Image (cartoon, rainbow, N blue to C red; front, side, top):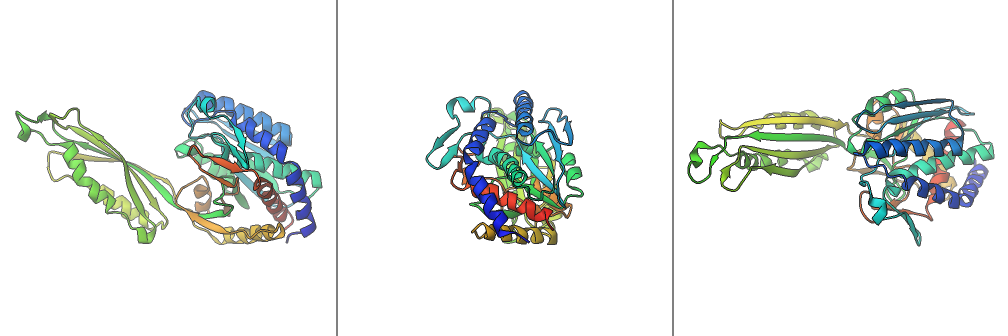
Length: 386
Protein backbone atom coordinates (compact mmCIF):
# COMPACT_ATOMS: atom_id res chain seq x y z
CA UNK A 1 0.00 0.00 0.00
CA UNK A 2 1.08 3.59 -0.50
CA UNK A 3 1.53 6.26 2.17
CA UNK A 4 0.03 9.65 1.11
CA UNK A 5 2.32 11.59 3.43
CA UNK A 6 5.41 9.84 2.06
CA UNK A 7 4.29 10.47 -1.51
CA UNK A 8 3.81 14.16 -0.72
CA UNK A 9 7.38 14.36 0.62
CA UNK A 10 8.69 12.56 -2.46
CA UNK A 11 6.86 15.00 -4.74
CA UNK A 12 8.24 18.00 -2.82
CA UNK A 13 11.79 16.67 -3.21
CA UNK A 14 11.32 16.00 -6.91
CA UNK A 15 10.22 19.59 -7.47
CA UNK A 16 13.10 20.93 -5.38
CA UNK A 17 15.67 18.86 -7.27
CA UNK A 18 14.46 19.76 -10.77
CA UNK A 19 17.36 22.17 -11.56
CA UNK A 20 19.92 19.49 -10.69
CA UNK A 21 17.99 16.88 -12.67
CA UNK A 22 18.12 19.15 -15.73
CA UNK A 23 21.82 19.82 -15.20
CA UNK A 24 22.44 16.07 -15.11
CA UNK A 25 20.36 15.58 -18.24
CA UNK A 26 22.50 18.14 -20.06
CA UNK A 27 25.62 16.34 -18.84
CA UNK A 28 24.46 13.01 -20.28
CA UNK A 29 23.11 14.48 -23.52
CA UNK A 30 26.48 16.13 -24.14
CA UNK A 31 28.04 12.65 -24.13
CA UNK A 32 27.39 11.66 -27.75
CA UNK A 33 26.65 7.92 -27.94
CA UNK A 34 25.54 6.84 -31.43
CA UNK A 35 24.86 3.12 -31.71
CA UNK A 36 27.42 2.58 -34.47
CA UNK A 37 30.35 4.51 -32.98
CA UNK A 38 32.26 2.23 -30.61
CA UNK A 39 34.73 4.89 -29.50
CA UNK A 40 32.00 7.33 -28.50
CA UNK A 41 29.97 4.56 -26.85
CA UNK A 42 32.94 3.53 -24.71
CA UNK A 43 33.71 7.10 -23.71
CA UNK A 44 30.03 7.80 -23.09
CA UNK A 45 29.59 4.81 -20.81
CA UNK A 46 32.71 5.85 -18.89
CA UNK A 47 31.09 9.24 -18.34
CA UNK A 48 27.71 7.81 -17.38
CA UNK A 49 29.26 5.43 -14.87
CA UNK A 50 31.27 8.23 -13.28
CA UNK A 51 28.08 10.31 -13.00
CA UNK A 52 26.14 7.38 -11.52
CA UNK A 53 28.77 6.86 -8.82
CA UNK A 54 28.71 10.58 -8.01
CA UNK A 55 24.95 10.47 -7.55
CA UNK A 56 24.49 7.08 -5.84
CA UNK A 57 27.93 6.06 -4.60
CA UNK A 58 29.87 2.96 -5.60
CA UNK A 59 27.62 -0.04 -6.26
CA UNK A 60 27.93 -3.22 -4.21
CA UNK A 61 28.38 -5.19 -7.41
CA UNK A 62 29.67 -3.89 -10.71
CA UNK A 63 30.57 -5.58 -13.98
CA UNK A 64 31.11 -4.22 -17.44
CA UNK A 65 30.44 -6.77 -20.16
CA UNK A 66 32.38 -6.26 -23.38
CA UNK A 67 30.11 -5.61 -26.35
CA UNK A 68 32.64 -6.40 -29.06
CA UNK A 69 31.82 -4.13 -31.98
CA UNK A 70 28.76 -2.88 -30.08
CA UNK A 71 28.46 -0.82 -26.92
CA UNK A 72 29.44 -2.45 -23.63
CA UNK A 73 26.84 -3.42 -21.01
CA UNK A 74 27.20 -2.05 -17.48
CA UNK A 75 25.55 -3.81 -14.53
CA UNK A 76 25.53 -2.05 -11.18
CA UNK A 77 23.70 -3.35 -8.10
CA UNK A 78 22.59 -1.13 -5.21
CA UNK A 79 21.30 -3.19 -2.25
CA UNK A 80 17.96 -2.19 -0.79
CA UNK A 81 16.70 -1.53 2.69
CA UNK A 82 13.38 -3.27 2.06
CA UNK A 83 11.91 -6.17 0.15
CA UNK A 84 12.04 -6.80 -3.58
CA UNK A 85 14.43 -6.76 -6.51
CA UNK A 86 13.89 -4.22 -9.28
CA UNK A 87 15.68 -4.06 -12.61
CA UNK A 88 16.34 -0.63 -14.10
CA UNK A 89 16.59 -1.32 -17.81
CA UNK A 90 18.19 1.55 -19.73
CA UNK A 91 20.00 2.02 -23.02
CA UNK A 92 22.53 4.77 -23.45
CA UNK A 93 22.94 4.57 -27.22
CA UNK A 94 21.07 7.00 -29.48
CA UNK A 95 20.18 7.22 -33.14
CA UNK A 96 22.06 10.50 -33.56
CA UNK A 97 25.44 10.40 -35.37
CA UNK A 98 28.73 11.88 -34.23
CA UNK A 99 28.72 15.66 -34.56
CA UNK A 100 24.97 16.19 -34.07
CA UNK A 101 25.61 18.27 -30.93
CA UNK A 102 27.55 20.78 -32.99
CA UNK A 103 24.43 21.70 -34.95
CA UNK A 104 21.83 20.84 -32.31
CA UNK A 105 23.16 21.54 -28.82
CA UNK A 106 21.28 20.73 -25.63
CA UNK A 107 19.05 23.67 -24.75
CA UNK A 108 16.04 24.78 -22.73
CA UNK A 109 13.26 26.34 -24.79
CA UNK A 110 10.36 27.33 -22.58
CA UNK A 111 8.99 24.13 -21.05
CA UNK A 112 11.09 21.96 -23.33
CA UNK A 113 14.54 20.51 -22.84
CA UNK A 114 15.86 19.61 -26.28
CA UNK A 115 18.92 17.80 -27.53
CA UNK A 116 19.85 14.56 -29.28
CA UNK A 117 18.86 11.57 -27.19
CA UNK A 118 17.35 13.61 -24.35
CA UNK A 119 13.94 11.94 -24.60
CA UNK A 120 15.08 8.57 -25.90
CA UNK A 121 16.32 7.89 -23.34
CA UNK A 122 18.88 9.76 -21.29
CA UNK A 123 16.23 11.56 -19.25
CA UNK A 124 15.01 8.18 -18.03
CA UNK A 125 18.49 7.29 -16.77
CA UNK A 126 18.71 10.59 -14.89
CA UNK A 127 15.21 10.25 -13.44
CA UNK A 128 15.99 6.77 -12.13
CA UNK A 129 19.01 8.00 -10.19
CA UNK A 130 17.14 10.93 -8.68
CA UNK A 131 14.23 8.69 -7.68
CA UNK A 132 16.66 6.58 -5.64
CA UNK A 133 18.30 9.68 -4.16
CA UNK A 134 14.91 10.95 -2.98
CA UNK A 135 14.10 7.71 -1.17
CA UNK A 136 17.50 7.67 0.50
CA UNK A 137 17.16 11.26 1.68
CA UNK A 138 13.71 10.57 3.12
CA UNK A 139 14.76 7.28 4.72
CA UNK A 140 12.02 5.37 2.94
CA UNK A 141 12.31 1.66 2.11
CA UNK A 142 14.12 0.89 -1.13
CA UNK A 143 14.25 -2.43 -2.97
CA UNK A 144 17.50 -3.78 -4.32
CA UNK A 145 18.03 -2.11 -7.69
CA UNK A 146 20.09 -3.62 -10.49
CA UNK A 147 20.96 -1.18 -13.27
CA UNK A 148 21.55 -2.59 -16.74
CA UNK A 149 22.84 0.03 -19.17
CA UNK A 150 23.33 -1.21 -22.73
CA UNK A 151 24.68 0.51 -25.83
CA UNK A 152 22.99 -1.41 -28.65
CA UNK A 153 19.23 -1.16 -28.05
CA UNK A 154 18.57 1.05 -31.06
CA UNK A 155 20.02 -1.63 -33.36
CA UNK A 156 18.27 -4.61 -31.79
CA UNK A 157 20.42 -5.38 -28.71
CA UNK A 158 22.53 -8.08 -30.42
CA UNK A 159 25.25 -8.09 -27.74
CA UNK A 160 23.23 -7.15 -24.67
CA UNK A 161 20.25 -9.50 -24.95
CA UNK A 162 21.80 -12.43 -23.00
CA UNK A 163 22.92 -10.08 -20.22
CA UNK A 164 19.44 -8.54 -20.01
CA UNK A 165 17.73 -11.93 -19.86
CA UNK A 166 20.11 -13.20 -17.18
CA UNK A 167 19.71 -10.06 -15.07
CA UNK A 168 15.92 -10.27 -15.36
CA UNK A 169 15.58 -13.95 -14.50
CA UNK A 170 14.72 -13.41 -10.82
CA UNK A 171 13.57 -9.81 -10.74
CA UNK A 172 10.26 -8.82 -9.18
CA UNK A 173 9.82 -5.89 -11.55
CA UNK A 174 11.62 -4.48 -14.57
CA UNK A 175 11.25 -0.74 -14.90
CA UNK A 176 12.15 0.18 -18.46
CA UNK A 177 13.08 3.85 -18.26
CA UNK A 178 12.23 4.46 -21.91
CA UNK A 179 10.08 7.52 -22.72
CA UNK A 180 6.46 7.42 -21.66
CA UNK A 181 3.63 7.80 -24.16
CA UNK A 182 2.19 11.15 -23.05
CA UNK A 183 2.65 10.05 -19.45
CA UNK A 184 1.14 6.61 -20.03
CA UNK A 185 2.96 3.40 -19.16
CA UNK A 186 3.63 0.97 -22.00
CA UNK A 187 2.45 -2.51 -21.04
CA UNK A 188 2.06 -3.91 -24.54
CA UNK A 189 4.60 -3.77 -27.38
CA UNK A 190 4.81 -5.58 -30.67
CA UNK A 191 7.41 -8.19 -31.46
CA UNK A 192 9.73 -7.35 -34.33
CA UNK A 193 11.19 -9.39 -37.16
CA UNK A 194 13.99 -8.10 -39.40
CA UNK A 195 14.27 -10.06 -42.63
CA UNK A 196 16.35 -9.62 -45.79
CA UNK A 197 15.35 -10.93 -49.19
CA UNK A 198 18.15 -11.44 -51.73
CA UNK A 199 17.23 -12.36 -55.30
CA UNK A 200 19.89 -13.73 -57.65
CA UNK A 201 19.16 -13.54 -61.38
CA UNK A 202 21.14 -13.80 -64.59
CA UNK A 203 22.71 -10.72 -66.16
CA UNK A 204 22.56 -9.98 -69.87
CA UNK A 205 22.46 -7.03 -72.28
CA UNK A 206 19.02 -5.48 -72.11
CA UNK A 207 19.03 -4.61 -75.83
CA UNK A 208 21.17 -7.19 -77.59
CA UNK A 209 20.27 -10.32 -75.65
CA UNK A 210 17.40 -9.72 -73.18
CA UNK A 211 16.09 -13.30 -73.34
CA UNK A 212 19.40 -14.62 -72.04
CA UNK A 213 18.88 -12.78 -68.77
CA UNK A 214 16.63 -13.36 -65.80
CA UNK A 215 15.99 -10.08 -64.01
CA UNK A 216 16.38 -10.06 -60.25
CA UNK A 217 14.74 -6.62 -60.14
CA UNK A 218 11.67 -7.86 -61.99
CA UNK A 219 11.53 -10.88 -59.70
CA UNK A 220 11.73 -8.83 -56.51
CA UNK A 221 9.00 -6.55 -57.82
CA UNK A 222 6.90 -9.70 -58.29
CA UNK A 223 7.67 -10.89 -54.76
CA UNK A 224 7.07 -7.66 -52.82
CA UNK A 225 3.24 -7.79 -53.11
CA UNK A 226 3.37 -11.34 -51.79
CA UNK A 227 5.48 -10.19 -48.87
CA UNK A 228 3.18 -7.31 -47.94
CA UNK A 229 0.11 -9.57 -48.34
CA UNK A 230 1.31 -11.41 -45.23
CA UNK A 231 0.18 -8.44 -43.13
CA UNK A 232 -2.91 -8.98 -40.98
CA UNK A 233 -3.78 -5.64 -39.34
CA UNK A 234 -6.84 -7.16 -37.67
CA UNK A 235 -4.43 -9.39 -35.70
CA UNK A 236 -1.93 -6.60 -35.06
CA UNK A 237 0.50 -7.80 -37.74
CA UNK A 238 2.15 -5.28 -40.06
CA UNK A 239 4.68 -5.86 -42.83
CA UNK A 240 6.80 -3.13 -44.38
CA UNK A 241 9.36 -3.37 -47.19
CA UNK A 242 11.51 -0.38 -46.31
CA UNK A 243 14.55 -0.55 -48.60
CA UNK A 244 14.82 -2.05 -52.10
CA UNK A 245 17.92 -2.05 -54.25
CA UNK A 246 19.29 -3.89 -57.24
CA UNK A 247 20.78 -3.86 -60.71
CA UNK A 248 23.88 -2.21 -62.11
CA UNK A 249 22.57 -0.17 -65.04
CA UNK A 250 19.44 0.61 -67.02
CA UNK A 251 20.74 -1.36 -70.00
CA UNK A 252 21.61 -4.47 -67.96
CA UNK A 253 19.16 -7.23 -67.03
CA UNK A 254 19.69 -7.18 -63.27
CA UNK A 255 21.60 -10.01 -61.73
CA UNK A 256 20.95 -9.08 -58.10
CA UNK A 257 18.32 -7.30 -56.00
CA UNK A 258 17.55 -7.02 -52.29
CA UNK A 259 14.68 -5.96 -50.05
CA UNK A 260 14.73 -5.17 -46.34
CA UNK A 261 11.58 -6.23 -44.51
CA UNK A 262 10.22 -5.12 -41.14
CA UNK A 263 7.50 -7.27 -39.52
CA UNK A 264 5.62 -6.39 -36.32
CA UNK A 265 3.35 -8.84 -34.47
CA UNK A 266 1.26 -8.63 -31.32
CA UNK A 267 0.13 -12.25 -31.28
CA UNK A 268 2.99 -14.78 -30.86
CA UNK A 269 1.01 -17.24 -33.02
CA UNK A 270 1.62 -14.97 -36.00
CA UNK A 271 5.37 -15.59 -35.94
CA UNK A 272 5.31 -19.13 -37.43
CA UNK A 273 2.75 -17.99 -40.02
CA UNK A 274 5.06 -15.19 -41.16
CA UNK A 275 8.05 -17.56 -41.15
CA UNK A 276 6.23 -20.01 -43.39
CA UNK A 277 5.02 -17.32 -45.77
CA UNK A 278 8.47 -15.82 -46.24
CA UNK A 279 10.13 -19.23 -46.59
CA UNK A 280 7.71 -20.14 -49.39
CA UNK A 281 8.73 -17.21 -51.61
CA UNK A 282 9.93 -18.30 -55.06
CA UNK A 283 10.22 -16.48 -58.37
CA UNK A 284 8.22 -17.39 -61.46
CA UNK A 285 11.41 -17.70 -63.53
CA UNK A 286 13.18 -20.91 -62.45
CA UNK A 287 16.55 -19.35 -63.22
CA UNK A 288 16.08 -16.88 -60.37
CA UNK A 289 17.16 -17.94 -56.89
CA UNK A 290 15.52 -16.42 -53.81
CA UNK A 291 17.44 -16.28 -50.52
CA UNK A 292 15.91 -15.27 -47.18
CA UNK A 293 17.94 -14.25 -44.13
CA UNK A 294 17.32 -12.53 -40.81
CA UNK A 295 14.77 -13.46 -38.21
CA UNK A 296 12.87 -12.38 -35.12
CA UNK A 297 14.64 -9.68 -33.16
CA UNK A 298 12.22 -9.37 -30.24
CA UNK A 299 9.19 -11.36 -29.09
CA UNK A 300 5.90 -9.53 -28.48
CA UNK A 301 5.35 -7.96 -25.09
CA UNK A 302 1.89 -8.64 -23.71
CA UNK A 303 0.87 -8.02 -20.09
CA UNK A 304 0.99 -11.06 -17.83
CA UNK A 305 -0.52 -11.35 -14.34
CA UNK A 306 2.69 -10.08 -12.71
CA UNK A 307 2.67 -6.98 -14.93
CA UNK A 308 -1.00 -6.35 -14.23
CA UNK A 309 -0.33 -6.51 -10.49
CA UNK A 310 2.55 -4.06 -10.73
CA UNK A 311 0.59 -1.69 -12.96
CA UNK A 312 -2.20 -1.64 -10.36
CA UNK A 313 0.40 -0.69 -7.74
CA UNK A 314 1.85 2.01 -9.99
CA UNK A 315 -1.63 3.38 -10.59
CA UNK A 316 -2.20 3.56 -6.84
CA UNK A 317 1.05 5.50 -6.46
CA UNK A 318 0.06 7.87 -9.27
CA UNK A 319 -3.32 8.48 -7.64
CA UNK A 320 -1.52 9.39 -4.43
CA UNK A 321 0.43 11.94 -6.48
CA UNK A 322 -2.80 13.36 -7.88
CA UNK A 323 -2.68 11.73 -11.32
CA UNK A 324 -4.61 9.04 -13.16
CA UNK A 325 -2.04 6.68 -14.64
CA UNK A 326 -3.05 4.94 -17.85
CA UNK A 327 -1.47 2.09 -19.79
CA UNK A 328 -1.03 1.90 -23.53
CA UNK A 329 0.09 -0.33 -26.39
CA UNK A 330 2.71 0.75 -28.94
CA UNK A 331 4.06 -0.68 -32.16
CA UNK A 332 7.70 -0.15 -31.30
CA UNK A 333 9.79 -2.75 -29.48
CA UNK A 334 12.22 -2.34 -26.57
CA UNK A 335 14.40 -4.45 -24.31
CA UNK A 336 11.32 -4.89 -22.14
CA UNK A 337 10.10 -7.42 -24.72
CA UNK A 338 12.88 -9.79 -23.68
CA UNK A 339 11.97 -9.56 -20.01
CA UNK A 340 8.24 -9.99 -20.58
CA UNK A 341 8.90 -13.17 -22.57
CA UNK A 342 10.46 -14.62 -19.39
CA UNK A 343 7.17 -14.13 -17.56
CA UNK A 344 8.46 -11.30 -15.37
CA UNK A 345 6.60 -8.09 -14.53
CA UNK A 346 7.49 -5.23 -16.89
CA UNK A 347 6.43 -1.59 -16.78
CA UNK A 348 7.84 0.15 -19.83
CA UNK A 349 7.83 3.84 -20.64
CA UNK A 350 8.61 4.80 -17.04
CA UNK A 351 11.00 7.50 -18.19
CA UNK A 352 10.49 11.00 -19.50
CA UNK A 353 7.31 12.72 -20.61
CA UNK A 354 7.78 14.57 -23.89
CA UNK A 355 7.74 13.82 -27.58
CA UNK A 356 9.74 13.44 -30.79
CA UNK A 357 11.86 10.29 -30.35
CA UNK A 358 14.29 9.88 -33.28
CA UNK A 359 13.19 13.27 -34.64
CA UNK A 360 14.64 16.77 -34.66
CA UNK A 361 11.87 17.98 -32.34
CA UNK A 362 12.86 15.45 -29.65
CA UNK A 363 12.23 17.03 -26.27
CA UNK A 364 11.49 16.43 -22.60
CA UNK A 365 8.68 18.35 -20.91
CA UNK A 366 10.33 20.08 -17.98
CA UNK A 367 7.11 20.66 -16.04
CA UNK A 368 6.26 16.94 -16.15
CA UNK A 369 9.70 15.77 -15.00
CA UNK A 370 9.19 16.05 -11.21
CA UNK A 371 6.06 13.91 -11.46
CA UNK A 372 7.89 11.23 -13.45
CA UNK A 373 10.68 11.15 -10.85
CA UNK A 374 8.16 10.97 -8.03
CA UNK A 375 6.19 8.20 -9.76
CA UNK A 376 9.29 6.03 -10.08
CA UNK A 377 10.34 6.73 -6.48
CA UNK A 378 6.86 6.08 -5.14
CA UNK A 379 6.61 2.79 -6.98
CA UNK A 380 10.02 1.68 -5.75
CA UNK A 381 9.19 2.29 -2.11
CA UNK A 382 5.78 0.66 -2.56
CA UNK A 383 7.51 -2.46 -3.89
CA UNK A 384 9.99 -2.40 -1.01
CA UNK A 385 7.21 -2.10 1.57
CA UNK A 386 5.15 -5.04 0.29
